Structures are given as C-alpha cells and as structure tokens.
Length: 235
Ligand code: SF4
Image (tube, rainbow, N blue to C red; front, top):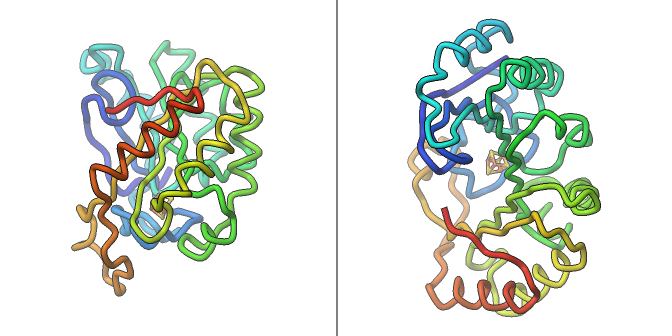
C-alpha cells in the first residue's frame, strides 16, 4: 500500500489512541484540502499488507482507550484491494479498525463488515456545487449514506463548513433535510469549521478566500440539525 504519512494520534481519527495510515492518492481535488501532498495518485512509500499487519500487531500496547488502526488519506478506498485484505487480517487479529473516507467509493459496502468505526464526509448536498469545488459530484456518497442508514449501521458523518461554499443560512436546512430523510439511530454528525492548517503545503495556487465561518454559523447548523433529530458530536 502506498502511504505518505503514518503515526499515532489520540481521539481525532476514531476512538482512543490510534495508529493512523494516510494512504496516497485522492479522487477528489478539494480546493481547501489540508493534505494536498496526498492527492496525487503517484508517490508515497510502498508497504506490503503483511508488513503493515506486522506493524499493527507490534503496536497493540499503544491502542489504549479503545484505540486501534485508522486508514485515511488522501482517499484510502482508492487502494481498496489491499485495504480489504489488510482489514480482514486486522479483524482476525482482533484489532479495532476505522476508516475515514470521502464517501465516493462504490466498494465501500464491501469494506464495511471489516470496519469497526466509519467516518464519512458529506461535503455538500448539491452535486453540481460539490463538483465545482472538488471535481466530483455526490451521487455515490449519497448512495452509500442511504445504504448505511438502511442498515442502521454506525457512521460518523463529517461536514466541513466553508464560508462561500456550503455554509450560508439556507444551506443548513438543505443539509439537514437530506440527511434526516434517512433515519439511523447509529449515525452522528460533526461540523468541521474551515481552517488553513494545510495552506502552506499547497504548491499550486490556493483558491479559497475568506473560508472562515463564524461561531453563529456553526451554532445555526447545530440548531438546525438538532431540530431535524440529528445527533451532533464534537471531537
Ligand atoms: S477528499 Fe479529503 S483528501 Fe481528498 S482532496 Fe478532499 S479534503 Fe483532500
């Protein structure tokens, strides 16, 4: 598997202390991406599934407070074949697994039985607007969301809030109305207010200007989601 970054992280990439693998390559090109070095399909360092499995097994003592292994990116599902193989082996070894995904993979449901904790982005309810800023529409992400809800399956939906792209007043209602249309008692929702931690890493022109949202905007989203019966969390 091609990996551009790995290391331990507590509480931000799934429960407990986790070994986080950032897999190289992404099918989206979000103009606000904080890991632009992971976007290109080529690059990263190659590790075999068995070498990673061995590293995970050796790290068991570090997986405290319900921790384990998280796959993120880039977009980890672009390496679905090897990812599936490793996820199965981790389950056999009784190691907790998590996936952070942009939700666009048609193979997500195939991976799902081997993922203990799923984090999935839902960046925009409007496919054309999403495509304008990320290069991809939301059709497959919606299909995945709807299937996951149909199964009452645990999912942690993450919504980046970016001024001028998805965080105006009526947009809170449109997000909530779509997401609440599929009931799932095991779904939670988190807002990720825009930040610029990755801006320095962009070698191409950084195109977001004035992406920051106010506390009032976040509060409005929170209130609107709660009014639609959606459970909000913060990590
Ligand atoms: S989906 Fe995530 S990793 Fe891919 S470009 Fe967007 S923000 Fe970056």
